[in-house]
Image 1 (cartoon, one colour):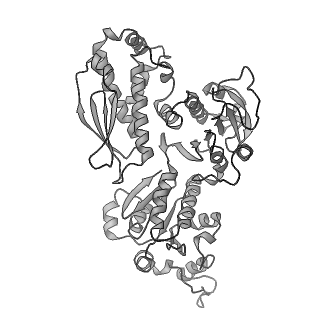
Image 2 (cartoon, helix red, strand yellow):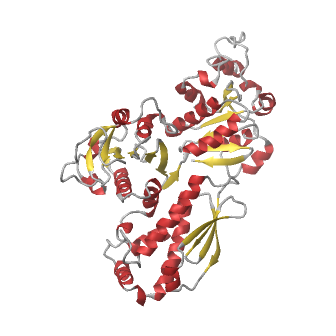
Image 3 (cartoon, helix red, strand yellow):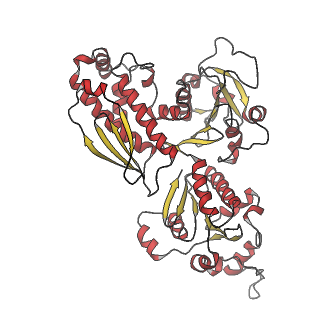
Length: 489
């Protein structure tokens, strides 16, 4: 609600009483001491809402608030500071007289990208606040043409760029609300980081090129030109439409040979690969109305469930890989992580477990009926047409018995992970079982029964024996270790 209120207050393009009052405030700040305090208070609320938007599980507390705002002090003091808290888990944010304590939702220190994101959030909100009063601030009116969240994503990706990323994100939002011939719209855009399209050297963009923004989405046929998966619109650094390109072909022609994109779903490898060098940014609107943002060779942001998610997959993979490598194989970490990304994109729930000490873990975690043994299932002599549950499980196990995870094709690993239950592997990559209904410690069951689903409870229980990746059917991937959530994206 606070975000909506501030947007109504500061959107200069809306003919409202609030807009007229804001114009007056901008024009004559020296005669408006009282509203300054109110606007500061409103922006303090917006800052909390925005931090909660990007970090919904975070803990935010106001430690100090200067209720009386002096105009000269407000505009003359240092706008904000970010300080490490005593435990170095979170941050203390000081802005315009308010001290806000930010703590992550898990007992894990903030990752560097998350700390940078908090800095970008505070910076964007402070710039937008100053734009109300500082007539000499560059692009002061443009800052109110886009959603705060989109401006934050744009500034995180390209701190020195123009508003073309925010404009392209707005176009994706509008397209996501549209249908064409009773079908959901999908589309995509490749925002060039170079002055010209490297696939057409020497070619200047034609005069009269339209800006790639929300206005284009109103043109009939616009949605037919790019499906976002195979074809994308190419946009130059000025935000003007250049041409339509096949994203896979474009990536093949512009990116170094032999390098493969990492940390993205299989179907979007070309999008990530297109951004590995050159500073390009790629956007894709999917049939599920998600907006995916690719930069620096990986999936950087995802918009779903009404909010942006900072993925930072490379850092989170490093944390996962370190936990797996501690006792085993780095290839196992990569295979499981990539499978989790592909299953997440397919909206398939799964549980991937690395049992650090199989001899201890198997008896406590896996029921006898689910254990993969070297025995070969035989027909039940009492009922040869119907296998008993014990033999039926072993009959399925026969398909991958004795194999390592790295010996399975990625699609096969994803297929066995999609069954109800968990895939469990030893640290050296040996497949211990799949489709296993894990045993849950009664203490874990009592602790989380009222708050967690069955898959989360199983992940918490299994994480006592080694690192776990949980993939939910709504597309979230979560890492657990030692009964705690380490990260989620």
